[in-house]
Length: 84
Image: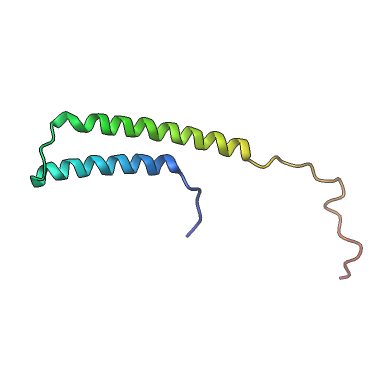
């Protein structure tokens, strides 16, 4: 499997959507009473926070990206010490 970058914005969004599902599951199971509109602030706040985290992650990674260094002009030349 190919490695990929960790994306904390998606993690935050997933946690808040899971929380919304748990709130509705608890209501459906009879553990507590949840008004129908209670999940709207959870989902909206979670998505806004996830967007902020994703933007912050992008800004940090962009700033820390390695600068493209100029190679010396003879970098492609074979090493004279190496014998074939």
